[in-house]
Image 1 (cartoon, rainbow, N blue to C red):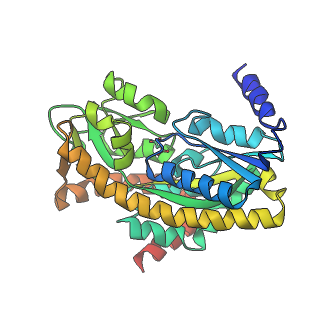
Image 2: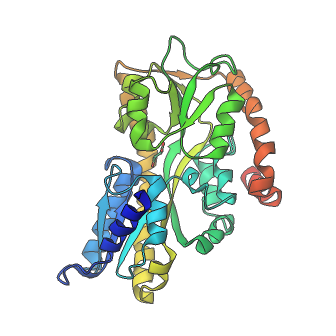
Amino acid sequence: MKRLLLVVFIATLGMPFTAAQAEYLIKFSHVVAPGTPKGKAADLFAKLVNERMKGKVKVEVFPNSQLYNDDKVLEAMRLNTSRTTGIMAAPSLSKFVKFSDTLQAFDLPYLFDDMNDVHKLVDSPLMDKMTDGLGKKGLRALTVWDNGMKVFSIKGDHPLRKVPDDFTGKKFRIQSSNVAEAMIKALGGTPQKLPFKEVYTALAQGVVDGQENAWSNIYSKKFYEVQSYISVSNHSYLGYLVVVSQDFWQHLPKDIRAQLTEILKEATTANRQYAAEADKEDRKKIEEDHYAKVVELTPQERAAWKQACQPVWTQFRGEIGGELLDEITGLLKK
Ligand code: SIN
């Protein structure tokens, strides 16, 4: 029944819209608040397209899971057969688990030391290698947008410092990633997959004790107001793959595709700036407020977390591809 409703809803996406608007309509769906790095980049993309491609392409942005949540949007994109109305989205890399084994590499704990490492990989030809397979699944990867490194939050009488003790008996909300699931288990906790829009309530009602996320999401969705501590673990990356339906993209006229690609490049440059700013500013706002207390891990604690996560690498090496993983780690060492 749910699938039928989704099909009917998607079919209506293809209905003609007024010619006064544009020849092509792109509905950009995302789950975060408009003021976050992804929200701002999506709005900038829409603004530039609507200014520069007036009459040809119109972009409408739907934030805060208004149109779809991330797990549904990829399905909706694949089912959409309209060649004049396309769906675009930027789900986190972790949410491609049903469509790509290789992209799981992004979730490996402690793969990246910092955002410079992330950009080394994202800007390398390895990125094409990792996203090529999505074409067969009806998805076309266009660019990667940042949020930032993830930190852990928890409700309780002490912060997460010691593994496995501080994780034991605690439930953590995670995205739909199998790697994140294995990571939480390796750290000693119990993982629970939940859509982003359910996280605040799950934390507030004690359905889960903690979660992992980037600063801007913890701030904009007020997770920190219902958590006691945030440990600055920087254990993995929260980033987004901007995707569109392969069929819609391939049938756009070449000049329109080229112009959209150029504008996306501008939005990507701006997104990196937004993400770097949000990382500092949203952390500061949380620290200055009276809710969750932010704690730094000692180098020894960080080393112990990293060590505890090693089995996750072994577990997923086969699925991700050993050769690819060696290429990635080789690149990051340079
Ligand atoms: C997002 O930033 O798009 C959502 C991340 C999450 O599900 O935690």
